[in-house]
Amino acid sequence: MIPPRLLSDGLLRSAARHPDKVAVRDEHSTWTYAQLRDGAGRVAACLLDHGLPRGGRVIIDLDNSGVCAAAIYGVMLAGGVFVTVNPQTKAGKLRFILEDADAFALVTDKHLAVQYEPAVAGLGCLRLVLSHGVPDDSAGTPCRLDLATVLTGGRRLETPVPVVGCDLAALIYTSGSTGQPKGVMQTHQSMVFAAWSIIEYLELVPEDRILLVLPMAFDYGLYQLLMAVFVGATLVVERSFAFPGRVYAVMAEQQVTVFPGVPTIYATMQAAHLKAPMAFPSVRAVTNTAAALLPHLLPTLAEVFPNARVFKMYGLTECKRVAYLPPALLESHPRSVGIAIPGTEVSLHALDGSPVAPGQPGILHVRGPHVMVGYWKRPDQTAHMLREGPVPGERVLVTHDWFTQDADGLLQFVGRSDDIIKSRGEKVSPVEVETLLCRMDGIAQAAVVGVPDASLGERIRAFVVLDDVEAAANVNANTVKRFCSLHLENFMVPQEVVVLPDFPRTENGKVDRKLLAQEDGPYAPGVV
Image (cartoon, rainbow, N blue to C red; front, top):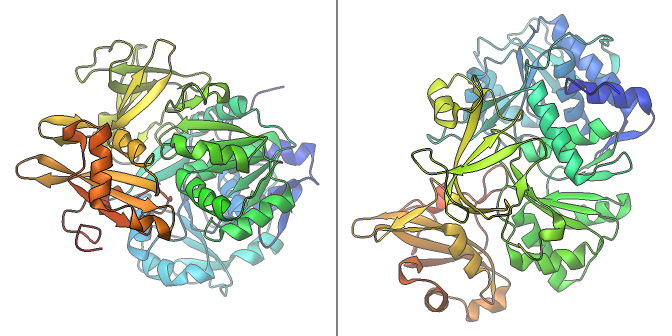
C-alpha cells in the first residue's frame, strides 16, 4: 500500500473503502464517510469558485460537529490551509487571527454572529463568509453564503487541487508570551507523520469509536478527527464536557472504545464517581495530555475504565506530540511522561547547549518530521524555538521545558521555563508542589504559581480545589502550609494559599496560570 502523503488522503481512502460506514456522529446528525467526502467536496468547490488560491487560509469557527469536519477537509481538498478557531473566541481575538492569517474565507455559524460580524467588518483581506442560517449576499463585502445550502446543493469538487507534502496544511494558533496568539505552521507531511506515529502506539483500528469532547481548535481535539479518518474509525462528537451527565450517557450508548481527556475532565469524573460509581467497560484506551495526570487520579481511572490501558503523554503544538508512557510502566513510573513517540528522538541539554547526564535536569530538545516549519510571520520567535540540528539544514525544536531523563530514557517533567519559580535564590518546580498538595486529604486539584516579591524574588502562591464541601472544615491556608512543611524543604512551602470552587480555564480547558499569577488579580488572597 502506498503510504498517505497528504492529510486529505485519509478521507479519500476511507470514503472509497467503506463509504457507508459512520465517520462522524454528532448530537444532531450522522455522517457516513461518503457523506463527509461529499460535504468536503462541496465546500472545496465553493471556495475555489470564489477564488481561493493554493495555500489560501480559511478560518473555521464552528462547534465540534460533522459540519466542522467537512469544512476542515474541504479546505484541504481545495488546496488551502485550514485554521480552526474555538467558537468561544471573542470578536477582538477573532479579528486578530483573521488579519494575522490574511484569511481568504471564514466558515462559521449564525449563532456566533455577535462575535464574527464585528470581527469581519471592513476587513480587506476577507473575500467570503460561509455561515449556517444566513441569507445569501453575493454582492456583499465580504460575500456571504449559506453554508447549509452549499453542503446540500452546491457544486462538488471531484478532483482535489494538487499539493505536495511540504505545503502547509494548517495554522494552529496558540497563545503567545505577549498574549497575542501565534500561528504554528504545520505541513501535510508533518501532520501525517504525527498522526500515524500516535496511531501506532495507541494501536487504533477501524473498529474504534473515539470520543471527542475537546475543541477541534485544540490540536489534541483536532488529531482525534484526523486519526479516526485515517484508520476508518468512527468519531463520536460532543461539543464539550460542559454537561458531563450527557457525555456519560453517550459513552455508554455508543460503546466508546477510546477516551481522550485532560486532567480537569478526569478530576470531574473522579468527583462524580465518588458520589455515584460508574464504569465504561467498552473503553480500551484512555489518553491524557495538556497537563500532568497526577497519580492520585489513577485508582479512579482504573475503576471507571476497568478494561482500559491509560496513556500518559506530553506534547506541545509546535510538534504535536513528544512522548508517551507505555501503559505497562504506569504503575512503576507514575510521574513519568515516557519515551519519544515512534520515529522521533529527544535529548536534554543545559542552557549552553551541552548534553546533561542521566538524572540531571535539562531543557528538552526534539528531533523528527513532526517539528513545525515555524511561527507564521514571526521569524524572531521561530528562531527562539528552532535551532540548528546535527544534520546540515535540519532544525531541532527547543521546548524550553525542563525535564529529567533516567538511564532507560524515561522522561519526567520538571516545569516550563516560564513556570519555574525562583524564590529565596532557589528554583521551585510548581509540579512538585502540586503533586504533594493533591496527596492531602480533601484536595482534589492544585495549581502553584510565582508572584513577584521585593524580598523573595517570587513568593509561592498555591490554589486548591476541594473534594467536597465537607473538606472545607479541614482545609485552609494554615493546614495546607503545615502539610507542606512536613514534606517539603522550607523554600518550597507556599507563602499564600487560596481555596477556590474551581480554577479559571483557558479556551482549551487548561488552568489559566497567567490569571492566577496576577499579583492583585481577581484570584489574589483577600479578593476571592
